[in-house]
Each structure stands twice: as structure tokens, then as C-alpha cells.
Image 1 (cartoon, rainbow, N blue to C red):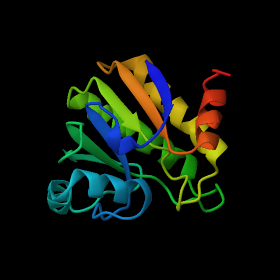
Image 2 (image 1 turned 90 degrees about the vertical axis):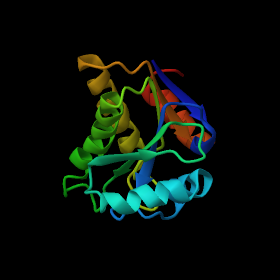
Image 3 (image 1 turned 135 degrees about the horizontal axis):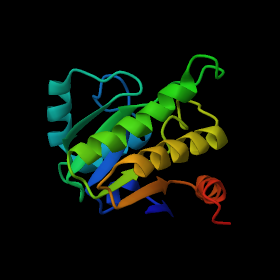
Image 4 (image 1 turned 120 degrees about the vertical axis):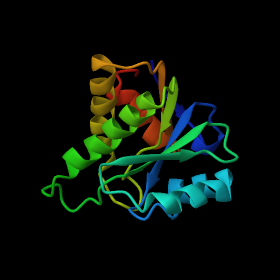
Length: 167
């Protein structure tokens, strides 16, 4: 039920793609910028109506020109040393995203490595939290059949492979 792939999240065929967004939901760099660019103006148009998103929360829009049906926008924490509830907020970002996808009856969902780019979250800790949050949700209640972690670099792919015990 959990897969990892190295690639571009905007090209994945799933019901929902998770966007590592900022609080405004109006686009940005990294994954966020790539999703808005590939999905087109429909995503931004819907995001403007949502009036932002708090850290750890999730909101949903159309996927525009992407192959997915939906984009689930979540805001991960900016890493500030680890003593400011970052782990809880990161856990919530993953958990609330998969929960929202489940509410919209998605069967497949793709996640990037939230908060590990410009937000500076240490990748090893972040990957552990991501997997724990997703497994925690899937064990309790879900109609979701597939979760894919889409990793941009070989190094990140190998880290998730290790965390999932696939190496």
C-alpha cells in the first residue's frame, strides 16, 4: 500500500497530489511552484478562495491540468531547532492531508517530502515522521489503497527506502 518512487510529483497518476504549500496557498518555490505551474491557473483561482492555510492543516482544490483529480495543499513547519512543536506540526501535515483525501474518497495519494527543502527540516527525522503519520492513519481507518512518496533526489529516495526497511 505504501510505495516510494524517484521522480516529479506533477507527472504522477493518482487521485490526489499533496502540495507542500506556504500559508498563503498562492504558490511559491519548490514543489509548490512546480504544482501551480504544471496544474495551471485553475489551482490558484481556487486557492485564492480558501484564504490561506495554517501549519499542519490541509485544504483541497482541483488539480487543473495535472493527471490527478485533486491537489491537497498542506503547510509544513519551518524548522527552528526542533523545540517549537515542529515534529507534531509535520505529523499533522501528513495526517490531515491523508484524512482529507480519504474524506474525498481518493484511492491513491502522492506525497512529496514536506518541509525538507527551503523550510529546512532534517530529512532523516522528517522521513520518519512522514511514514509514521501515514501508517498511523492507514492502520485505523481508510479507503485509500495506495500512498506514494515521490522523492526528487536519489539521496531522498534511498533515505525513505531505508526508513521503510526496503534495503
